[in-house]
Image 1 (cartoon, rainbow, N blue to C red):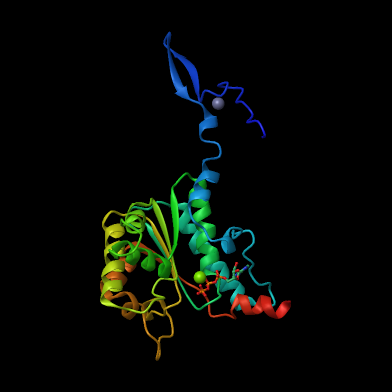
Image 2 (cartoon, rainbow, N blue to C red):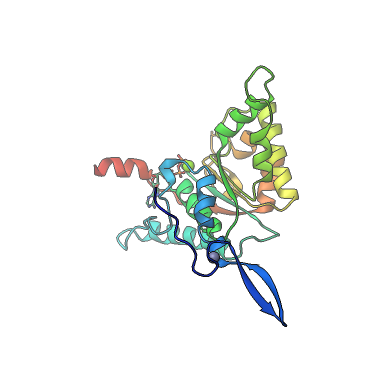
Length: 247
Ligand SMILES: Nc1ncnc2c1ncn2[C@@H]1O[C@H](COP(=O)(O)OP(=O)(O)OP(=O)(O)O)[C@@H](O)[C@H]1O
Ligand SMILES: [Mg+2]
Ligand SMILES: [Zn+2]
């Protein structure tokens, strides 16, 4: 077993003795905070597929594609602007909206990592998995005896809700997502959400498609707009298909 290096400042006790006006007292040593971001990342439940996602490996097209280049640069600026003022009481949320494969989850995870680096406790949940877990907690014949998933998303310091609205709509789904968003909005608790469900107010083309309001309900949608910086992804080719073609 590898031995843990002992901190030379505190000798591994986690405290250092400081003298103030001839009185000595214990104060926490810096080493207690080292590795906090790593520990937070370990607990955030980020799916393996996105563990490496950062701003550094988010590519922006070159000058040969000026429109996409400009639009994606603006998206990056908006997300980084959100991080700069994080956590903003008035607008603690971020909503990334756009077509499939445009990099919403990648950017949301990249943002989450920077937030964890600031020391915030973050939690990633895929919308559909979350609803399934909550439902299991409500089901008296299932093994899950409590409402752990539900409590965790209410209480998480920062919640990433991925693929919002990607679930068939029932009254129960609408009530559940409304209560989660309402709680976080009322308590000004950061929520980062991604969705590929179109919404006219975010500039999506909605024609003939189910909208965000229809998928999550108008009350949840209204609160999202109240609490979030809304970032619309540019219309571009699905990055997954692009990568597949290159192989
Ligand atoms: N600009 C980019 N640079 C590098 N990788 C990217 C970029 N955009 C997307 N990717 C990669 O392409 C894949 C798909 O991106 P991502 O999952 O973020 O899309 P999405 O918009 O969330 O799609 P969906 O709506 O289907 O969930 C991921 O592996 C992601 O890391
Ligand atoms: Mg996604
Ligand atoms: Zn120490």
